[in-house]
Amino acid sequence: NKNFGVKIFKNPNSLNYNLFNFFFRKNIVNDNEKLLNSYHNLGYLKPDVDSRELANFLSQKIQDPHAKKIENRGNKYSSLYVIDKEMRAKIKDHLNNKFKDIVDALKRYYRSGIAISSIQIRRNHGIEDTSYYSKKERTKQFEYYNMYFHCDYNTMNFFKLFISLQDISVDHGPLTFYSIEDTKKFLSKSNYRDRNFYDELSLENEIKNCGKSGDSLILNTPQCIHRAGIPKLGNHR
Image (cartoon, rainbow, N blue to C red; front, side, top):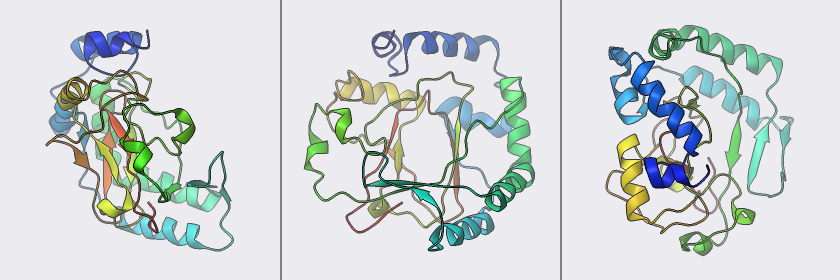
């Protein structure tokens, strides 16, 4: 089940989820939803939504010396911030208003309601020695924040919305991903076996989620292979 998704569907999601996604795309999704043409065909969408005000508010909150965060979750390179009631209310209001048209389109696309399963604010830091990550075979022990290419083990009606809380360049370790079709090409050219075993390479159509604070990305993580980039030492994302 774990490996045959790669062999049969050229997607590192599990076999049963790939089967679900195949029939779901064929029989359930509303692919006539014009607002989501890019999302349906490519697996991602960069919404034309201005989230700068929310990004500035959240950025200031987590820069407060008293901001609560969960550090050293097995490593020193990634932090998870505690979202207080005020932050949660601001996020909820922003999604209900600024993202209303897109969420409504997603409801029509999936022919179902949309539920938020998790909200997280994370910070990833640079690593002193990154030479290990050019190896073909890696171990989970040194994957501090999902830095290995993978697809999320889930069905395609699971997706993630990323909102940047800072300006992001290649030096900040941007989220890196491939479209649905280019995921297949990456698996083939990298001799991909699983997230711990593949040739380290970058294809021409690799996408790095760089941009300004407040930019957003909707990514179908079960269908698009992706990973967290490693910030240049001294930087964070």
